[in-house]
Image (cartoon, rainbow over all chains, first blue to last red; front, side):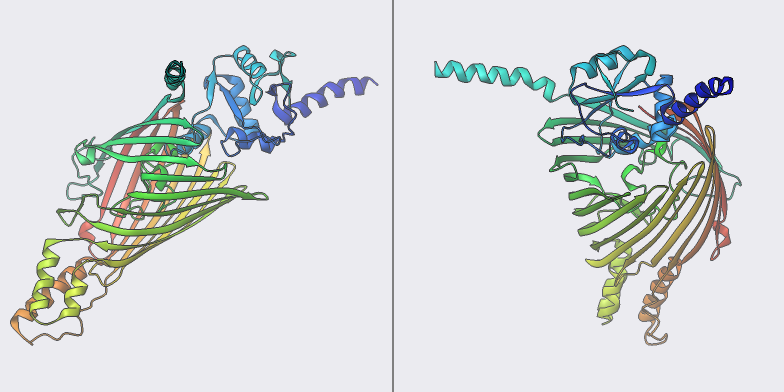
Length: 136
Length: 379
């Protein structure tokens, strides 16, 4: 029993780390689309522009100096900061993509997503409140 | 009353305009310093005087979303190599017919190579510039139409880019500035990405006219001597041309491997058939990428005057000698090795350092070593 108590939090920690560390991907509560990790990755790499319910996607970023953005990009997109920047410069300078809207902090992201039905973003999971829905 | 209604709706339209016609500005720049390692060497526009201009460039892009799938993009680049004269690299209207299909009309990049679309955006790739031996077509931009279709088959992302157009932008070649005419430029590039592997193939055809005065003078000489076929071969006039590219890219964890092969042929012309390729391997250590590239550039001329014997007439001997002199001078067998690193020291900027060892098997006087350092950025 003692063993179990010790290992359970450890396991939980490992499990959540293998998903998205402390990053929560959030959408508007009205959005009932199914989103896999690969769907989310495609959205944030500009490859996918619609949700499974057919609504067009508005994906938003935190500012590039954010640690949450770093871990989101590493774990979900599988790319480092400069790799993501290089990837997006390809899209931008060929007119294929527009840079995603950026917000200064988690609060701004949550406020935007709570008021925008087709928006998707990510924040530090400790900041999530009832105005948005966590999808991962 | 009716008038008033029209007036009010017009006002409403005008008021809503600024939000729709929002213009986004982005830019990129490379500041490149380079020098050859020995006083007798010159390579890619560099000699043994440290130069900061030849490889440097600044570019600014403005784009606007007009709504309903319509957009406009303009990119102006100014290069040290062109004495900083600004040039429109892209200027097009785009229409997103569906999420998968996009139509472009106007001035745009021809997708000849893997890195064509973002050729000048050094921040987007490992080297300071992609290997010159392969990336050596005389032009990279055309005016016309294109359609880009992006889709996925299960786990494979695919993209098809079809183009049609023409280019008449002035080029510098053999020490002359000429106005070429590359018309009916038609082609398709296709790219497939599965997980860590990307495969690419592209094929283009065109009718090429390159009015070099020296070649024209030679052609007239052949014509007067009664050799119509040789005259036509010497002239580069509406000659059917083809360009083929095959490429691959592996991005596996910290390992990157890239290779490209190209073949260029301008039929019935004194220009050689060009076969070029390179292979690059790199390894990413945290924020430093170390890479090495090996490349080969083979140009083989068709000596179309070889059937004509010497001794027919002094004028013909002169024409034959001059023509073959030109044809043989176009033949090359070049090889180069580039070792380099890219250091991402900042969110939006990288430092790059490269050394290229170049050798020409046909003429060892052209062998050269080149060191380049660059600061590249996107903003």
